[in-house]
Amino acid sequence: MLDVLTPLWLTLKVAGLATLAAGLLGLALAWWMAHRRFAGHALLDAVLMLPMVLPPTVLGYYLIVLVGRNGWLGQYLDRWLGINLMFTWQGAVLAATVVALPLIYKGARAAFEETDPRLAQAARTLGAGEWEVFLRVTLPLALRGIGAGLMLTFARAMGEFGATLMIAGNLPGKTQTLSIAVYDAVQAGHDAQALWLTGVISAVCVAVLWASGRLLQARH
Image (cartoon, rainbow, N blue to C red; front, side, top):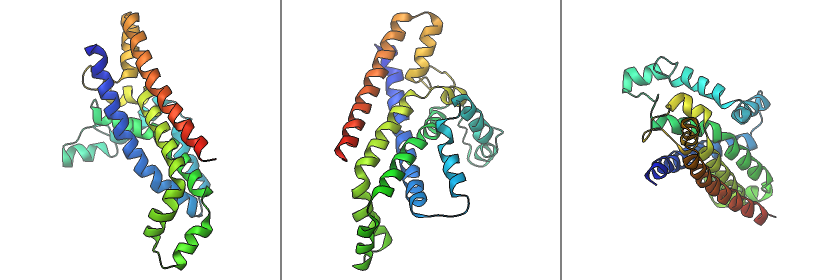
């Protein structure tokens, strides 16, 4: 049981923090992309959706190039702040955030675009500022779509494997998430443990997807 609880707890922690990070960034990007048009809008949208179609190992390589000890950003994090994300659970959070970001971005953008702009304009006419319009009009109207997107983001972060393995490695008790623990168990020939681990992660993901579907149905 301890062999299951340790990676399960780490997976929930990584997925929860990744959902929070992707949620904040994704909401900001979704609102901006839904309400602004500019040169390169379609290109930026494609870049933001890229993690959904790129192989996770390719994303993992990009992250190594970016935040590795000698990476474009990583060398300065290490030199100035003493921060090294390689082979750490924080690196796993970063990998899960990048991989899951398109789900909340796409869901939130669709929800924002479906809101009636006349309601926001009416609030502005009554003297509400942009921040107040967002909090009291736009966000409540888009909340169910955003909630469904966050649930899908959490489920995707829980199942992340390739990018996490490349940047965080496979250190039992430190960076070994459930998906990596399944891979490790299969490689070691521990079929019973692999079956139990896959059952746990499948049950959690099914529950999240079911709840997400209920939220989406409630929008109509």
